[in-house]
Image (cartoon, rainbow, N blue to C red; front, side, top):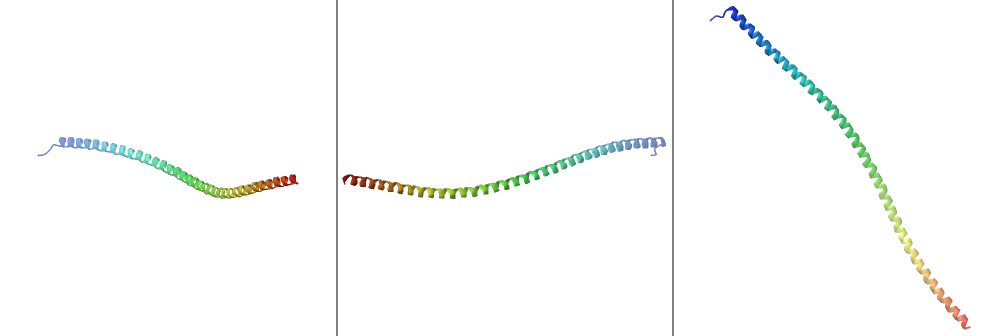
Length: 128
């Protein structure tokens, strides 16, 4: 079966039109996907920059925190040494106080003995 030239040309024209229509639709879809990909890549780049910025901030804060911890550890060490010194001083002060109290009681006892002797001597002098 042979197709007439007119029908053949009409079929070719329709085929060309349909093919062109499909091609245009596909090119439009590809262009839209390309745009979407470019937009998504732009968003990804922005997010990577934000992430890098956040990492920098976190790194700085971590360094500050580490320095702060080190500073506080040094202060704690100094305070512990001061506490040790204060405890030693307190022990010494307690010993000194105990010695002073012992000396004070000895002096009080000596004073009482001396007062008793003075009273006895005074009585003896009155008798004579």
